[in-house]
Length: 113
Length: 116
Image (cartoon, rainbow over all chains, first blue to last red):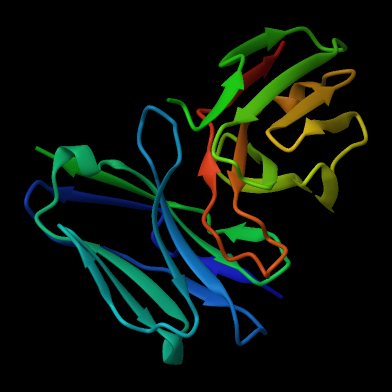
């Protein structure tokens, strides 16, 4: 069965520190998709990245980077030089084709000035 | 231009009442969803429609009834509201899942429902 685990419930860092949010998934399919979403205190859900199971290249977007490792079923998210505006709940999600998206429980990140 | 919009943003009502939440997307997407986010922030899908056809119907009390008049709209009607229905309800949309999906979802701003 599909499952997404985000073992870190809450993380606090001081501004400018780097922080990595962990995501481990379980799936029976060889084709699947992984996502990260951000939910800032204002409440909206913002799409950050999508990855399919055949593309293991890591991705960097500004201060954000993602490390996808099929061997460990992980799709971790790193924020470099964190800022207060990064404070949010971050969700990792998994989708198997023709199925529903399964969200992880989320990691609440607080960046302290 | 708002991509996915929901009304109302806040809904406060008494137990036993019936209420509706409306959702509209202007992205031209074929698939729309309703999610429930509880007080612990867990996000769980409730329903999904593809081109006005119900394709996902999770274990949700039948007091909840989605309606899709066209592929740009997906409304959620809730009968006989209970205290446990208090949550934030999100509407979302994505491109056609007919080819296997895999597309990201775009979410509305959410509707915070409080049942007293």
